[in-house]
Amino acid sequence: MPRRDRRQSFLIRLTFRTLNRQSACIPSLIVFAQSMESPPLND
Image (cartoon, rainbow, N blue to C red):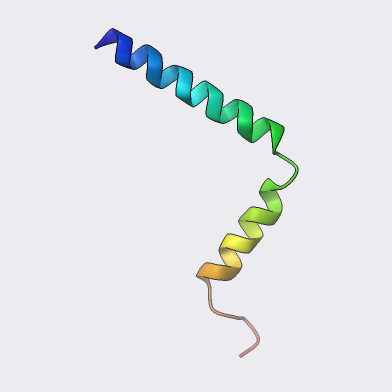
């Protein structure tokens, strides 16, 4: 059980490291996701 927690924390740390490395394209990804989810504003 503790081993799983340690591995999970390692995966979370690795994910955050990857996000920090790609932090430049995150806003555009968020805008893209919002544009995909929400209907177009100019009906």
